[in-house]
Length: 450
Picture 1 (cartoon, rainbow, N blue to C red):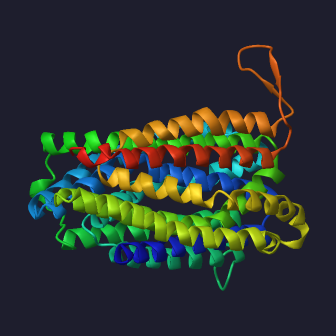
Picture 2: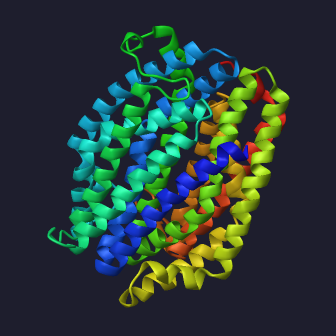
């Protein structure tokens, strides 16, 4: 478990450092509107990764099963089929992004200069969408084979490129022009290009028993059907989570740029506790899939709970630090003139810190279920928690009054602002944690066929 989780944890940490770098860069050298715009772009970039999760989740689960069962040839063939499906998805996503990108920004309740900034950033990302697919699907296949180191090395290089280019172009270091906001976007674009190319080169040459080969890049209907049968519910789950998160952030955007900027700063700091969950989620997925492929459901179950114990323990420890140091951590991401952003972000951090056990269970147990190929139940739980609890709770707790769409009816709310929206998020996490624990203890996930 630790051998699988630690490289992913380091990889996630490097990614977070880039996110921190961008937040500091924007917070100290640009304006509050840029802070609000970069918060939204973090969610839209997450959406881009999520759009390929229907391929990545299915690929991880099936490669893990094939490797666990000793079917190396099928694992290689499945990797090629995953890329074939990913290419089709990348073309569709790029076309949709080109047609509806600006409308998506407006739909998320950004207006004026902030909306223009977000749209500019998004247009820079469009050419990178196929490379995001290559990076996402390729690393997912390698993780299914138990290779976590390749992703770590690639992301380390990507992050160095991203940070170097962003700071150089924002500040105009040396002979290069001072591009401001455009420099942040170009740095991210360069990182995606490097990441996609490196993953492609690695798999063309062959790594961990996986290799892209032209003879296996022709459609295999049976493998594609199995891949999508496992991946589509998992991808729908991921997209439901991201879509509802975008809806959630659109609620916060309606509260103004100050609330949106504070939300972004708090999310950035909270991600320190999120990292161990993502790492042990990946470890739980790989172990569950490989042990079930090897015909050992007892060890699959044990690995899920052990991942929760260790990963969750780390998350609770980081959450305690965030709770006690929230007034110190939040101001790190803004300049003195934006003290109001830090003051609003600090209580948000204290609220979410108490939800770390629930967040750990939700993240890590969902990874175990996806790795086992049991992707339908996580989708159902996400819809219950996000659509049934978080979104309506955010409206009710954040606003003084809520207009029912299509009617003239008004409902009285609590008017707690962005803090109320975060209360709704914490309640949602506890509901979903209870549902995931119930599913794992019932044991039906160990009998799922992929």
